[in-house]
Length: 136
Image (cartoon, rainbow, N blue to C red):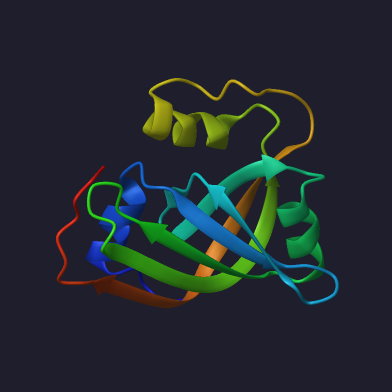
C-alpha cells in the first residue's frame, strides 16, 4: 500500500466526484461516477451487493479511480489499487458519513445488501495542469 500525498488526500476529503473503473468478466473496463470516503489511507466506495462494481471486484479486485477537483478540473488524481474488503454496510454507517460530505444529509437509499468497497491504493499520481477553468 502506498501513502496518499497531501494533495491527493485534500481532493479525497472534499466533495469531489470520482470515477471508479473495474473489469468486466470479458476484461472490458466498466467506469462509474462515485462518491469517495477515506478511512486512514484506504478509500471507501458505497454500493449495493449486486451492482456491477461489486460483482466485478469480487471476481477481480483490481480497480482504478480518478478524482477531479470540482472547483478546478485541472487538479486531478489517478489511483490504482485493489478492493481488499467488501464490508457489509446495511446500517449505512459508512455511507452516511460519505453522504454527509456530499449532500449534508444521511444516505437516503436504505435497504439490505449495502456494502462498502475498501480500496487499498497501490499507485497514486497527482496532476495539476497550468490552465484556468472558465465555467459556462
